[in-house]
Length: 174
Image 1 (cartoon, rainbow, N blue to C red):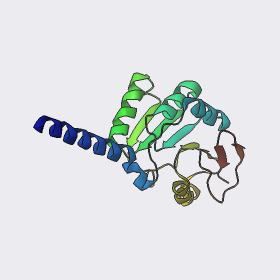
Image 2 (image 1 turned 90 degrees about the vertical axis):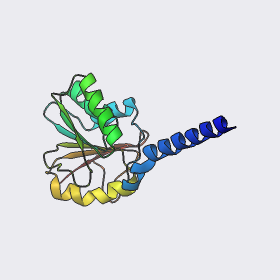
Image 3 (image 1 turned 180 degrees about the horizontal axis):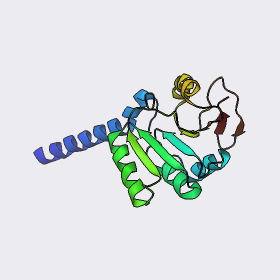
């Protein structure tokens, strides 16, 4: 009986730990749900990312946007990730992909990160989070900076381009 109870307690602790790890970032508006690789490619194509760009992925998760931008387009890519486990995972993914010379992963909050040198921003955040970032974008980003968002448009802004079937929205800072 004790052995079964112990196993159930361990299972409950593991389950609760997993739920907390998976969803705690929802509190800042960036739950973890990896962008499908096909959508990453489409986002980077729509934003016309090139070797001349400095791309920031806000809430960079597993680092796939960063690695793809560096390998496919030759862009310099910076990820901002607040979750320590995802930060370490993406840092390792960048090293394994051998693109550490083009990619930096920063541990930090996307609301306070310095993004002034960005020419492209990628987002897969919730709508309310995108809305909260509008002022930051308007104050910090240079004219012409492209912002590409997957799944959630930026409320109140007009798209420069969009792929509605894929739910990808491109904006340009005036």
